[in-house]
Length: 361
Image (cartoon, rainbow, N blue to C red; front, top):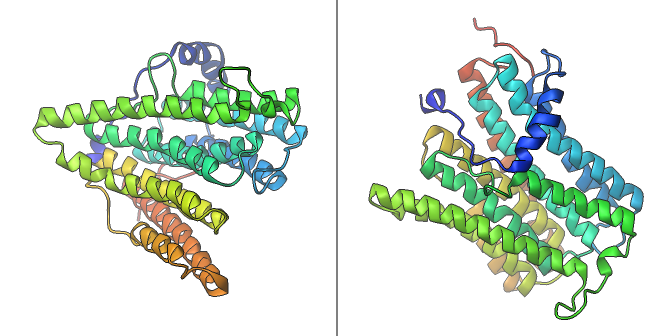
């Protein structure tokens, strides 16, 4: 019933959003065929963003190697395609009268996957290495995005940034990072900045990202807690933060205390768990459900971390256990997404990737 009554309410739009809407997104949306499902637009954009990350990861698996110019240019094109699709899916849904909670869930769910892919991609471009800086960058990317959905659970408004700088600007800055690498060459981000900074450009970018991320996170915290206190208590919103705190803490602490130990597997497991947590928070906001629901992968994460600290995960057996745990994290996330999408599609009698309603017996 709550899903049926749910209405999407976005936060403030930036001046750039208005310009792109008038001169790019709206004219392009009007040229899309009426048979094209909005969810297909969403998934096409998501595939492009993930493909950009895969190309960079294949060129630099450990984030230490130089990424070819051709790959950087491909990333620019793919991310621009993703950014455009991210704006067009909602316009197409309203244009053909196909707006639904399923579309909103898929949109935000794909955005959570793309957020990880885009972050990993530019970590490879900046040659940050698969270590503390890369995992910290992931955590800083995840935090404001998840908190925006958590804030929406309290305020019913989905924050997309501030009034001057939002998600569109962030996506285009990421495109610019890849474009500068293609134009300036593979050593562009190794340029050392003059005093008083005296650091390489590749190390400055994560600090700028952290600064913006903490500002956006602070805005969400202030808004959500303010709304909760007006209702009388902030205990429940605070409890809903615990899964995020646990996930981000181990994401950062593992490479600090266990450098080089199963970091690729850690990246896959934490990324899948973030996706699961993000999609569940979106659903809880839309359906007014309590968060989190029972799950196994996330509570096991501190156990795996403790085992690693104690040396139990060393050797062939330990690696096998870590691989099994990572596979389970991915499986649990995929199973959850499939179950939620199918349940909503059946309830609203809609197709996931086709326009029109399902036939009922």
